[in-house]
Amino acid sequence: MRIVLVGPPGAGKGTQAAYLAKNLSIPHISTGDLFRANISQGTPLGQQAQEYMKAGHLVPDEVTVGMAKDRMAQPDAEQGFLLDGFPRNLHQAKVLDQLLVEAGQRLDAVLDLEVPEGEVVKRIAGRRTCRTDSSHTFHVQYNPPKREGVCDLCGGELYQREDDSEETVRKRLEVYHSETEPIIDFYKAQGLVVTISALGKVADVTQRAMEALPQKAA
Image 1: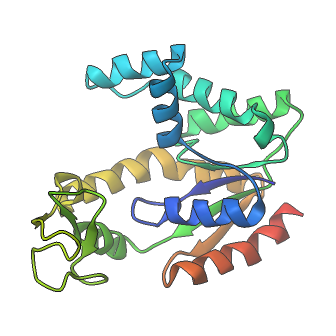
Image 2: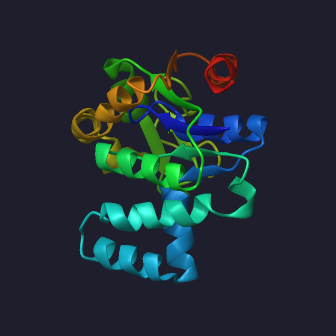
């Protein structure tokens, strides 16, 4: 099964991707992991990406596409994959279609995780991160610390990352609407889109996805 996962920031794509990939026995391919792997391994594509990132520029589509193409060609992806964060714009979606045609493959489904904008802002802007250990995270509403501003795990100071501020979240949503949302209409025209609500418990969202996917991926 070959799936593309889409949804706004804060929709829980990373969490759902991990569960779905495990349930479907296919690799989870995320752009973040691709970048980290290529950079740490010093591949030519990784070196190119690092140069752009060091200069404060966005990594060009052709570099991202090259990384995704190499990863999809690996043996563990022969029977399928779950793409998370790629394609992120219409150009990448069209190139992906071309790559799959050349490989004699096709997408089975595009899973669209739907979350109201207000909930996205609430989810991200409510995050608090520990200054001592950034892996310790809390949420002012959904997972509050026992003492306000203090990490339960190590006693470090909790703070709101700049990336998690409401202003930044709204800017990220603007980018999502302008760059990534158009790929949903592109895939709807191919009859591939399955839209589910990403509200509620993680397990409930995963169950919704698993129930929806076989109907489109048969």
